[in-house]
Image 1 (cartoon, rainbow, N blue to C red):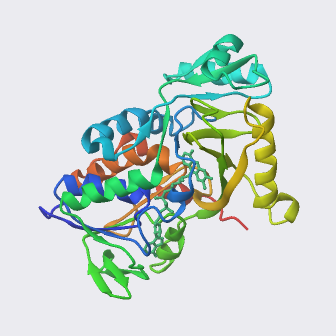
Image 2 (image 1 turned 180 degrees about the vertical axis):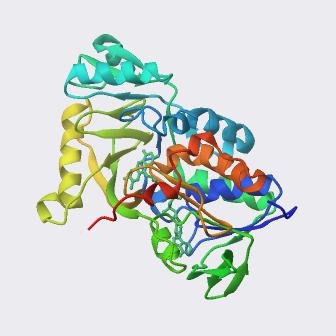
Image 3 (image 1 turned 135 degrees about the vertical axis):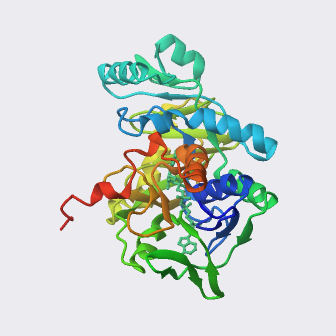
Length: 365
Ligand SMILES: Cc1cc2nc3c(=O)[nH]c(=O)nc-3n(C[C@H](O)[C@H](O)[C@H](O)COP(=O)(O)OP(=O)(O)OC[C@H]3O[C@@H](n4cnc5c(N)ncnc54)[C@H](O)[C@@H]3O)c2cc1C
């Protein structure tokens, strides 16, 4: 940036926007963080919040994903006890043991901290697990955060570093002058800026449209269940073929389910019923667990699944940070984005995340 103290508006105080605002403010930028509601009231507050490094196949953003643990450890050091992370480790497996073995081999080859564990070790790690699989992937360094408390801690730290926080303020449009963003419009008046960061989750598409920029991001539903338990049933995160769970207090277990449908047979209540039944069957001591609540969160999902991060070509000062899985990547993305915006660097970790990758593709019907 040419100006010594650039004025930056960050739109969206979910975990991603809060992290970007914090990292910018601590570097001395004049930051205004704007949200139409309160921090973490978007999908962040409805997430399972697993810092999930080893996931799917190591792909174009594996470098970014691999930084997650180290970046969250750094944030813990900077923000202290107010930034709650449970480094409980994660066990995951597929129905087919060969697939689990391949998953571990591939991730090990890419430098991930994951190892193959056999039945005996799995039983030691999770003594309440019934039907212990032959093998599992154990990511002992992974963990999970309290996404609301973590976002609030980032917002507080951003404010302490000088950021202005405007909650209850909807951005209705982006403002442009001479091919550059000039700020944002809100019902309470305009906010001028040299840079606008779009971290508005599923809201980014509509905001882009106000200046003719297409951001190919769809809302993707996922279900979060709170299950009441009589005592602690699990030690770490468990992602089996039919349940994804973690214990958050002695009496509450969270479960995440990926897909829902509009039909009653596959709606949230039905999915929740099946998930609770699976928990009862898969864990010793779980026969009496009950469903406390079920909610649907709308994840901002770029249409090709990869994050959209960086300055937008042709629109000076417009920067986007929209992605899945945002909790996992927020710590790293906050620091690297602040550096791109303030130092004019190009983070190698974002190489496959630029919006321009969509330019040559045919638009979807
Ligand atoms: C059930 C479930 C399980 C999940 N599990 C995981 C997991 O284990 N690990 C993981 O990494 N991710 C997980 N996710 C995804 C993760 O929660 C999201 O990727 C992440 O929270 C996205 O954060 P965000 O800050 O980009 O979006 P949001 O949290 O949605 O924040 C966007 C903010 O922008 C604000 N906003 C929108 N439009 C405007 C506007 N016009 N003006 C002002 N403000 C605006 C909203 O109010 C909101 O606060 C899960 C999601 C769900 C639903």
